[in-house]
Length: 135
Image (cartoon, rainbow, N blue to C red; front, top):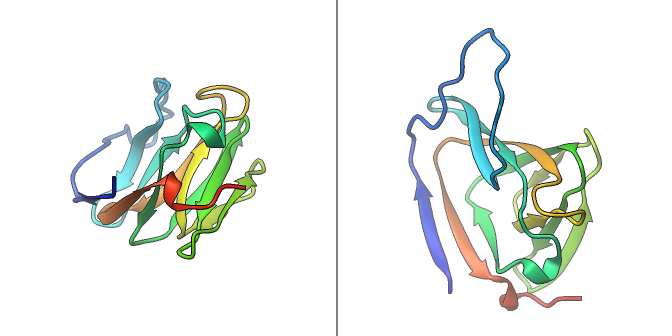
């Protein structure tokens, strides 16, 4: 089922300033810092372990910056014509995404970790992966 979610500006994270912080639980997505009214930074660690486990792709009305910090993460990118491709991220080599996307960790749930930077206010559309051709 297609759906749309609007993310409004709100305080998601209020980390200590000028101090190291951490201890984040294993979650698919967690905002860890933000500059209110500009951007937010989060940790992304997919639970899915293969393309077959992905149920939907998402697309924001803004670009997202991903950089792999550890493990393995494969982004699944869909275009508006029904094509789909898989891009395995490389450590510390960024990618800016504006297409339909989702991701998975081929070595097991939550085994890969990306740092993501995005606006702090945007609209996200979701579409079932069946709308794209696999393979």
